[in-house]
Length: 143
Image 1: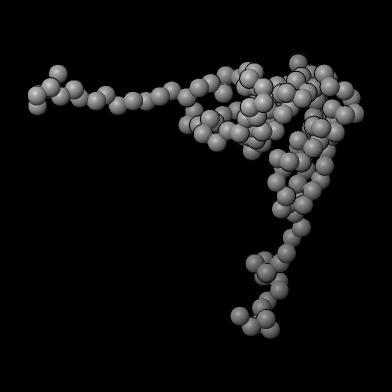
Image 2 (image 1 turned 60 degrees about the vertical axis):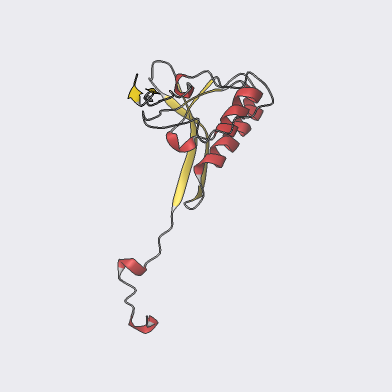
């Protein structure tokens, strides 16, 4: 492509800045209000997952270990190792929505240092085994 023939007013050739806001908010049980506990604005090319867990670590260092009890996340923040670390180190339960066709056990990376490190959440139940019935052949005839 000849750079002299490119029309820079065309939107395909314009660059735009992109930023992401990763925030940690507190809500009350009645859902009357919320306030921002921690926030970070980062480049749009960075993934939010490690940034959120850094924010949680900073808040726990600032306010104490047993202040955050439950962390409600979106599906984009599924990271078994980090969620297990929050449960073991800070006693923070993690709740996240799952679809019915998601197999969370397939790619999980739970730390196995402690035997009781599995989260206590209905979303993390053992998957059902589907076994197709096999025909029983005895002398060439089905049983």
